[in-house]
Length: 334
Image (cartoon, rainbow, N blue to C red; front, top):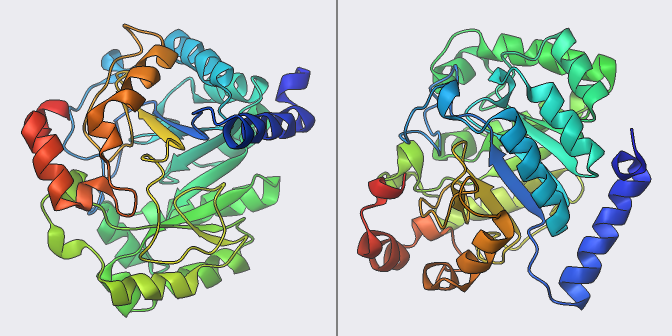
C-alpha cells in the first residue's frame, strides 16, 4: 500500500480538507455517498431509495468507471467515500473497489444489511482497507428486525457478521432509524446498549425522511417531543446523527442539512449526481461530464441554493412544491 493509503496519509487528507474549507472557504464535499448498486436482498419498510428504477448489474457503473470516479473524488479533496446501495456487498468487485479507494487515501465506509458478512468477506474487507461498516439494525428482537427487513434470517446473519468483525477487529457501527415505534418502545436505547456490549464503534441514528417508501407518508415524521427524545440519546463520540464525522451533540430540531451545506453529495449507481440520496433532482451524469464540473453547476443552481438548511428538504412542503414538483414531477428524477 502506498503512502497515500496509510493512516498518516488519511490524516493529512483531513487536515487538507479543513484548511481548504474552513480557512480558504472552498466548497468540497466531506463525504461522497456512492451507490454501487440498487440491488438488494431485503425489502425494508422505510427504505429511502426504494421505488427508483431497478437496474440489473448491466446498468450499474462498471469497475473501471467507479475507479475513475474515485480518482475524481480524491482529487476534489473529499475525506470519505461511503459505498451505498442497495446492498454494496452484492458487487463482485467490492473488495477491489474498497482497496482502490483506500489506496487513494479515502476513508471507506460501507452500508450493509449484513446478509453477506461472513468470515471471508470480513477478512477481505479488512485487508482491502475498509475503515468502518455501517450495519443496519432496526431492533435487537430477531422477529421484529426481520419483519422490518421483509426477509427472515437477516438478524441472525447480521449478528454473525458482528462476531466476525469483533474477531477480526474490523470497525463497525450500528445504523438505525428513529421511528415512532422505536422511540415509544425504547428500542433505540436497547440498540445503543447492544452496540456498546458488542464493541461497536458507534451508533448512527437516521431520522425519517419523505423519500423512497415514505415519500408520501408525512405521518412518519417525528414531532418535536420525539426529536428531543432522539437528542437525549446522542452521545459525543458514540451516538450521532447521520454523518460519522459529525458526532458532536446537536440541538434538535435545529439541526442543519448536510447537503445544503455542501458537506455531502450522492452519486447513483447509474452515475447521476444529486445533493443527497433523498433528493431526486439530478444535476448531471459522471458518464457524460467530469464530477467537478457537475458540482460547480449544481452548487450554483437555484434548486440547490433554495434548499432549507434546518430541515430535510424532502420534509419541507414549500421546497417540494416550488422546486421539486414545480420543476418536474418527482418521479421523472427518480
